[in-house]
Amino acid sequence: MKAHARTYLFVPGNRPERFDKAVASAADVVVIDLEDAVAASAKSEARDRVMHWSAQLDTPMLDRIALRINDPQSEPFPEDLRLVRESRIRLVMLPKAEHAEHVDALVSAVPDVSVLPLLETARGLAHCRAIAGASGVVRLVFGTLDFALDLELDITDDPQPLAEAAASITLASRLAQLSAPVAGVTPQIDDEARLLADWSWFWRRGFGAKLCIHPRQIAPLHAAMAPDAASLAWARRVVAADAAGTGAASVDGQMVDRPVVLRAWRMLRRAGL
Image (cartoon, rainbow, N blue to C red; front, side):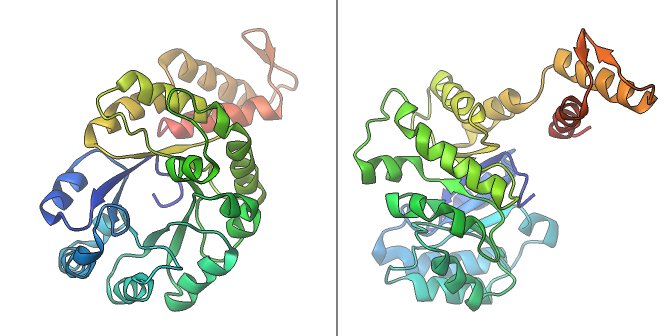
């Protein structure tokens, strides 16, 4: 689940009444947010609520929980590290990751943690290959809104200004042999067309998952991410032709070579087959 989730749903860390509702959603991973969603004055209480709630979860459920802590250069960071050490949550989203050393600080404090670095600044993008290769990293996450703010990019109607950054993050992920990276949020909660357009744009650029800010975004995304019946039928024919082992083969007029077979297998895995 850590490396192959499709959807990551944020829930504010100071709203414990929403934790179970988020878990009951179809989101692959629920991200308890101690950063942007929680005011400075409420962070201590939020940590206590997260500790109490997570202590009651069974192990399979814990595998669906991540914790977004505060960034490594912030005042709350040491206390967030203490929470991670003392809680049972072992998947941590690290905001404003700008150097591999930021990941190292987290892993040094909690050696068995799995890290989702959030690339949200120009400096983070500049060091994304080193960050991707740091110990403990399981997947890169693109914090698109903060990144656009840092570079003064206008992505209100079109994510195209993010194209170069998206390509760099996809390449860094592949070089580090990580799963395809996670695309940022779509803030328009009630605009399904925009949500799916955003996802399509990032999917065509090699991303494999998306951050979400509301449960109603999950079902449309999962439907869009699933291969359609015709594509699955094609994938089955390709796998069958490859398994027959009769040498050069073709399916639907296309030669079945190794890249075609691998694409077919990848499509079947995405569908859980």
